[in-house]
Image 1 (cartoon, rainbow, N blue to C red):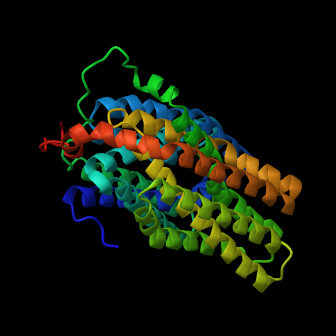
Image 2 (cartoon, helix red, strand yellow; image 1 turned 120 degrees about the horizontal axis):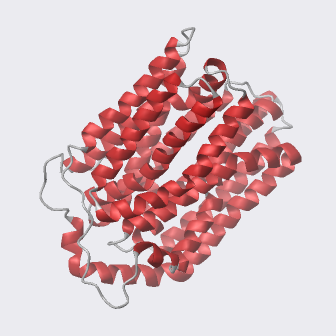
Image 3 (cartoon, one colour; image 1 turned 90 degrees about the vertical axis):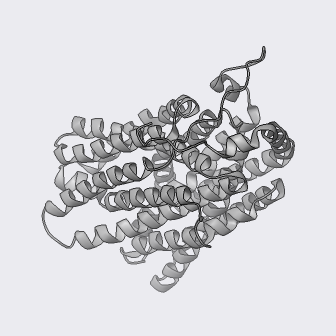
Length: 426
């Protein structure tokens, strides 16, 4: 698949690739840095990240009103600037309180940037390319994470603190570079507000009364457990419960990145109707069941068979991840009213924030307490979220999509074209 030809879309994608490359430099070394360089115990490092994650749950909704009122570039650049300062401040962290303070800043900015980046991509894109633009953004973000992780691994062959400092500084610089690219875009302001009517409601009041949208967002908390399953459960399971080599998680992360890069855009382009959404969630449920079964069986297998089962598990898990991401991007975007898309997407993005706050502790506790049987519990969570989303979408999406199409039709030209370019400072 060739990337979009539009100059602004390409500029946006390059900015997110640069940003993801920098983030990928730090992700693989974050726990090592906190334990070996800062001197925190693994327990305190995990506690600090959990505290920061819980505080940052409210970050997504904070972004919504800003995105509905202001230029999306300004909101994204503000998030990137806070992240750059946060990662630069990591260089001065020397205690648990200072670590928690910096982690809160970074997590808050990261959670705000998720809906902000999506709104920016949607405003830069137009018409039927909007959801595909999100798929391109996610694909290049994964590619950046993977490339950054490989570079980080190469840097750590050098001894001492210096490689860590260089990687942290490079991550901070990547946010600055991405901000410069974003500011080269023309202004990306929200569509003009319609004339007020007696039944007008505020954005969040409108979202609060949208039971279908809130239901899908709630179910996405369950579906998003694939994130903790890959990032937390998989490495621990490989290290503690299988005979596979300790280098295996790195290989499996690379496999996950490769599959996302190869499939995400193709799968997203396939979803053009509610029937495509239900097919994606059904495929994802099957993938999650296969993945959890392979993980469970791998614990009792010999070395070679364990490696094969782990590769199958991550392949099936990533297929499920790609399918549910495509469905989630379509539903969260197309069911959101044009005028309040920022607020709607900020609420939907909170599902991932909630999962990232509770997911790691939940999956580790379940697997530690139940062993192989714990994978059945994790499968139940993922399948319940997938099937619940499938049924809710099948029941309500056709009418809602038709309603949204009718409401956008009179001002389609205005909503797709953000207007003449303005100064980067505008």
